Length: 187
Image (cartoon, rainbow, N blue to C red; front, side, top):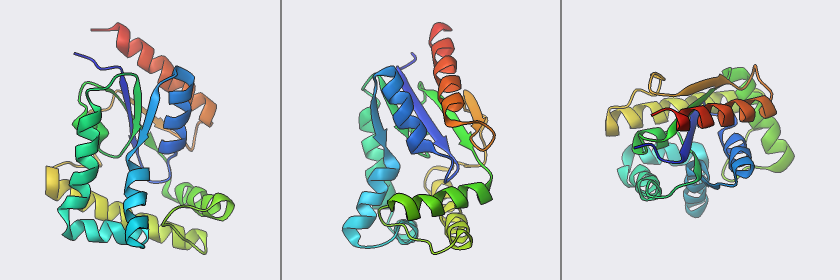
């Protein structure tokens, strides 16, 4: 049975959180970000997001804490979740994948850090942001494969895939909402 939940996964720097927040606002749904939870854990430990990823490779409890929170949310309705793995824990959700070119992602991350700052994330250049993004991606890819047998490069289970480098945010939001409504109508 389909749940009135939208899960938004995607590449680092693809705009998952911004997109999910805006989709939730448009629909009047609640929003949850596992990335925010992960950053909060890093901040509690006084380390960067890259460092918490390395620690998570050794301490499965970090990923399990985030995943357990996602599993608890599956009983809810009218929810938009941005998370790399929410689609896995919420299989009857409308599953969206956001892609982006790694260079553009690094630019977004770097300028985001410079403009508003990011909890537990630093970069002094686009090149440094790109390097940190690649390191984080490889860490997550390894952890999710080792913990759950998930291949993060396999996007076949998603109901909708969009490249946020080729589409403006308003278009991405509109396409997600249109796709979601169409998905809800079909059994």
